[in-house]
Structures are given as C-alpha cells and as structure tokens.
Amino acid sequence: MRIRGVAAALAAAFALSAGLPDLACAGEAFAGLYAHDVTFIGELVGLGAAGREHGADLHLGYRTSPVRALGAIGRPQAYAFVSINSQRTSDFAAAGLSWRIPLSQRVYFRPGIGLAYTNGKTNHPPANVPGLTAEELERRTRLYYERIDFGSKVLFQPELAIGIDLSRRWAVEASYVHLSHGQVFHSGKNQGLDDAGVRVVYKFGA
Image (cartoon, rainbow, N blue to C red):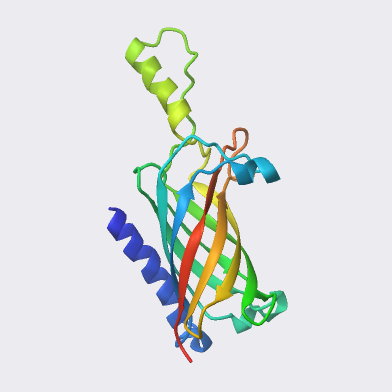
C-alpha cells in the first residue's frame, strides 16, 4: 500500500506538469532524509510538535517549473511529495506551492505552503474512563505516549528551506516541514509533526 501511495502521488505531480504547456519540459525531482517528529523547532516557534514518534522519514517528490499563470503571487513552483516513516507510524502525502528566493548567485531561500493527508492517528480515546479493562487501559496509555494525535487526517503543511546550487543540474536543501490542523480542520488538541532534514534536488529541462 505504501508503494502504491508513492506512485500515485508522484503520478499526480507529473500529470500537473504535463498539463501546463510552459512546465512540460522542466521541473525538479527531490529526495530527502528527515528526522521524524523533532521537538526543537516547535518549541522555538510555538507550533506544538508532539515528540512522541521516532525514526527517519524518506521524502520523495517533484516540483514543476515556476507557474507563469501565478505571476501575481511571484510565480511559485507547484510540488507534490510523499513521506514514508521507517518505524511505520505516520506517513503523509502533501502538495502545494513553494517560492525560490535568491539570496546570492548560488544560495536561495525556499518557503512553501500546502495541504497534507496523513495515515497517522487522530482523536485518541481517553484513558481515564471508568470500567476499562487492564488491556484496554494499557493500549490507550501506550497510544497517548507513543503516537501523535493529529486531530485531523487533512492538515496544513508549511515548510522552509535553505538551498545551494551545486551545479546546473544539482542542488541540496536543508529543510523543515511542519504538519498541523491549525484549528481549522479540527479544534482542540493540535500536537502536530515537525520534520527536519536534507534533500537532494535534480533539475530537468534546459
């Protein structure tokens, strides 16, 4: 099921590129390795990462070339990617827009915003309900301490990256990706997920 999910997300991204004439022969593929559910960034900016899950995340994705039709907002690139967790906890697929902002001839800043769908847990059952069996109490307690409660399957997916062009074709980016419902797709608990890592970018086209 994970392999089918990766294939479907990447196929959707390539279909988006092929459907727009000015994007058909360009774009970028990227792959990255991320620490899953880190807490230091959430603590710094107050986004509320959970720190409950572990392992590494593999990100695989694609970006189009800048979308001319979106010139009014700076010609962002459309992207889609999937994230697969090594501990088989919370995977997700995301799509959105990102902007490449040059800082020098080779270095650039890349903010982005999108939507994601996760197969992670939502709405944990309470463990303080009278009459639970010992097994059910243990299950709910373990769920609370070991799994993120996203609240919603659909989530906002903001991200930030700093990149450097290694050559005409290759670049590397240090990036941060956040997931949370933002009190829009759900209300109440908003533990969220923070990923921090590095991705390699390969550029197609002329």
